[in-house]
Amino acid sequence: MDEEYVEAVLRVVDAVQSGHVTTYGAVAAVVGRGGPRQVGTVMRLHGDRVAWWRVVRADGRPADCHGGTAVELLRAEGAPVRPDGRVDVRR
Picture 1 (tube, one colour):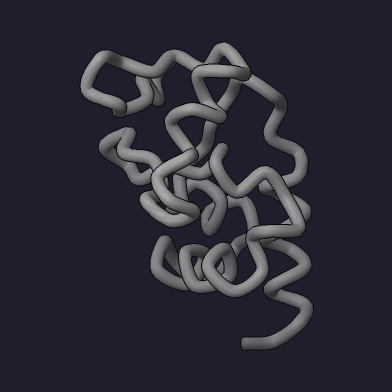
Picture 2: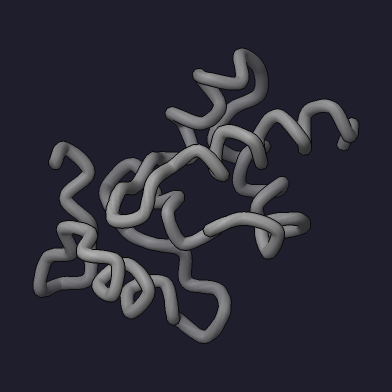
């Protein structure tokens, strides 16, 4: 994976404010190339450099890595987490 793409993805994710989320697909759209899977790969390999928990699937499901701590981190930031653990991405 080329370093320019990795840095572009990480810049977009780094711009997501506390208490907010974005989707893998939205990140890809802002970067202008790749898709949700490519963004997911970047996040899996390099996501520890940014607030990785702020990137969720299109249906609002947070990442299940890091021992499932994404939901806890999102709730702590005040993100709109539903009782089922999904994030209301429209809010």
